[in-house]
Image (cartoon, rainbow, N blue to C red; front, side, top):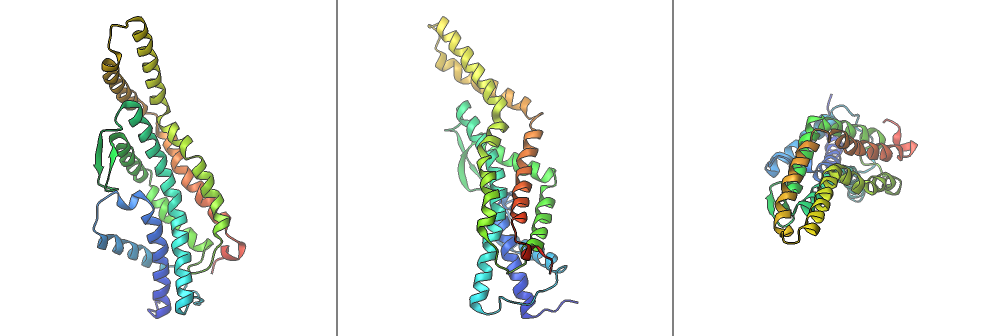
Length: 263
């Protein structure tokens, strides 16, 4: 039976801080434009659902000073978990930026309703593709399961060592550009062959204006190659999403044994 006392309310509040920090660091939370009140209710609802199945621990964070320290620990942990998700989606942004530069779309920018800033066309398209596929592969379910498991490894309000959790995230960040290039590699290689062919033609036919002819040829060939590549991009996307699980597993394994015990 629930006991709606001050300890339980503080427990839910600290849990909500962890969940909010995790979701705020991910593009998933902004995939659908919702009012701030709806997002807040969503965070509170998830917090209440998770707290319903957890025993409320003895409150070592009672008192304002201890409560503030516990709140900072929760925000930092949520931000660390959310950073892993953000890095995975960053690989799609790297792929989009690379193709925008290669195809000449870098100066053609549109307003992204998710980030509220101007981004190139393919960068925005890859961002929406990443969010769409994340939901299609049930990544949101895995995200919630990971947050629930983090409550076992890192009890709410308990201190944790950030230095032990940095290494998995840094390892994921090191592979950000390789994954981003892998997402766009076949199209980049196709554009490279097109530029090589245009260079040969321009060398043998100097009377042709290759700058005028080359741009539309590169755009058409690049878009066709990108369309064909979408049929086989699933494996690379799976590796990109798997990097989130690997980073989170590293963070959870890095938790000391004293924190990993269930309450």
